[in-house]
Length: 220
Image (cartoon, one colour):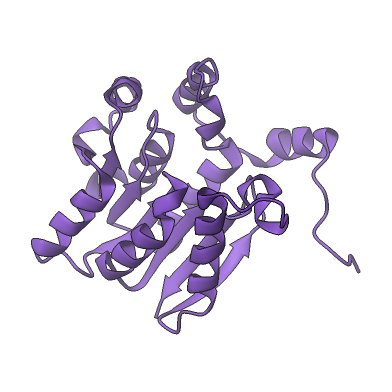
């Protein structure tokens, strides 16, 4: 029996991509265009996108929320998995990135199902709560500025229904969370949200070591 999670070598990653990841062509082209941007490291990996699509199907999500849209890959994954019955509220502050997102959403035929809110995410989440939308979302996906992760988690926890999921990306934060030499605010915020989630009696949680680490917290 293995004593720890297997390290993903380049050869093993190539095998996983070839044999287990089914990425729609338009999403592949979106990912390839995003790879040319200066901030390309923020792009969701295709295996993560597939996991997100599977999770949406697993919990039969009809309404999802995401904090951090970038060029639209994760929102597209959720919208595709839900089909015409579903909708996504997508939060971001960057018009340039989300213009790319809008273009690919149109190509995928999901643009009408994605409600893009260009504003600070905390403001959008607060507004949703003020509108009485607590408990109305099936899934929230958090992948934005790390300093605000604890705040985003608390707000999303209120917006997600019982039985729904809050997913938090970059939970391993490129290995920095395990290195005491890193004490910057972003790293401390990722550590804080991890401690908060795994001590939160409102949820049951696990960390999936895919990509840069993905926490899945199911609201009880």
